[in-house]
Image (cartoon, rainbow, N blue to C red; front, side, top):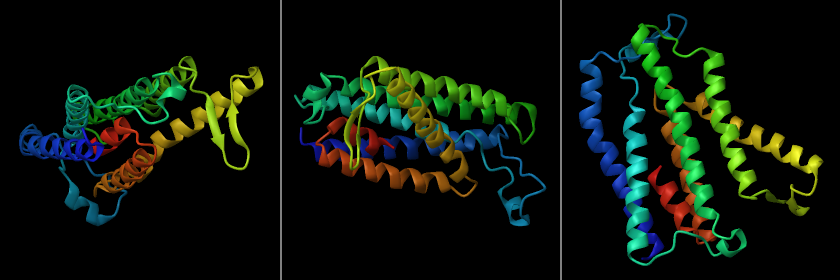
Length: 231
């Protein structure tokens, strides 16, 4: 299958499922009064957002999972490959890393879902405590980095230096874990900083998804394009 067609299929399925679920989930959440409580300390115009349904991210999570799975299965059944032209260098580990990234995203989404559900259940603006959120994010971050380490995907290309293998000794291993932790954990929380009541997260996600689609075309990495398209 042509990779561009696979990308289009991924985008169409994700959009269709998410939009379709929106007509079902949003009215259902409103009926259950699963709405956002606006703090008094915020701007006065935020009050108009009172009651905006929480947990709407369920639509996107389901859309991403089903779109990614359906498109990957379609590509496989039509004899296509989900890996890139560099797959030989990773000995078939690309898909493992891709799925690990999906699990990381879904795991962090689960933390957010639990946070929203707690707000609704307890009828307050604050959901999980900072410690609880941090613990959930730490578990997902460490699990993802451990997957990278166990799959020996520890070589990075550093501009002006070249490819660096962080498995050479204990010192480079520590550098790998520290840098990976700050990058992954930082990216996870950067979404929290940009997300808001006016859909800021969607615009940021779209920008990042387009960037990864471009990278997928450059490396001819079908799996990455499908994943980014599903976002």
